[in-house]
Image 1 (cartoon, rainbow, N blue to C red):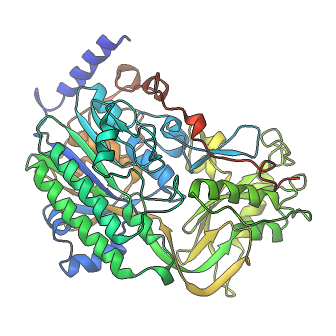
Image 2 (image 1 turned 90 degrees about the vertical axis):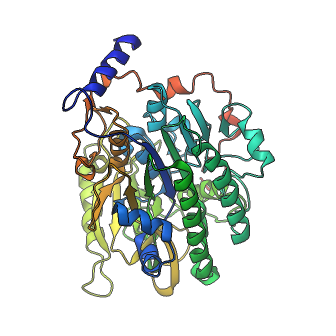
Image 3 (image 1 turned 180 degrees about the vertical axis):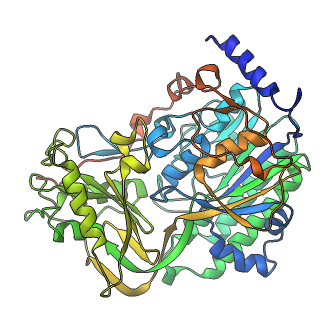
Length: 531
């Protein structure tokens, strides 16, 4: 179907409903992300009256816990929020993507998100959008409006659309990524963080006061950056101070957007403090699934950007193994989740597990993990998931791990090249947890005092429903029509009839950013850890 006929089909779907128009009076939608926020940290502050703007939204709207991806990591979570698709469908699981037929991995970019994000869909449908700071949006794609890339953006690159906007932001002192992914030092000083919030708040409010936009999404990464500090180095008052400042920014943006705007506040995952640690890399060696390399030499890992460090850490971990005798090895971990990949013949260059033996080895690892107890009688592992079951889709076999290990909530998981398999009684260590936050308020939102539960894949279809826009039939999530008043039946449109589903290849065609000069790879032999 050509684009003209597709647009006609879209218009016909948009006009369907009870009568000739929707029973809902559509509002603009403002989405505000507090990366890493959890109700465990917010509820005491809400009860104490320290977050008045968030409390006001909850009072006149509704709230929910928002279940993240497994593992709960920003690289997978934000693309899931933006696309309404699961990891196996949009193609991003961790910050590094495996290189086919190799043990290497490369740093991801927005070009790896193989599904149209909501701002691309809305732009193609004629809406003006503003997107600020969403992780995994570098390089920035062209939209009808503005897009300022977030986490993974190099400061010295063109990180904003339209052309020339980056220079304006630099002149204002704006920093695109507060973390250490590209730079060697994180902007973790609380005064500097608050300064960046003030800059973003002012620039965003200028846009929100205009009347020509339909959708704005603004993510603040600073909470995640600050919460990752080791507890012994973290003054908790700084986290509380930051949350109070984020609440002030939320109030300013809500006011600037006006009464004809629905407001959604969410996070990609939560945070928790863990006193017990399970090292899956060490366990795989002790259990006989990973074979130690007797000649391995572990030098100090390079200090600098987190991208370089993570690549080197991955290479060091593999370098500790005799890959010719290893059946499985640890990959990404986050919070109380771990990932395991088989050394599969035909997929890995030195794979030894045959396709016929694949299920048997996975079953054996699963049984052994579930049998771990500490102390006696208390399990450490809550569940072991097959990656293909968690994340079906065209990318599942390429990027999803073979096993995703979910520990009990009080156990953190690492894949460290040093230390014991089980560590307990240590000072608490902050890391991600599964459930984030969701708050929704607006004149079309049915208020509720109950706290619901949503998943990340629900956010994009719900957002389109709030904008009275047809939802692509392939969207995996639930639009939660009962959240609206009056309850509004979602309008679904077959993907083949929807010209707004522009592929990532088309969206970035002609994009001038040279990712080859920016990429980071983990090369086992190149870093001196391989045989």
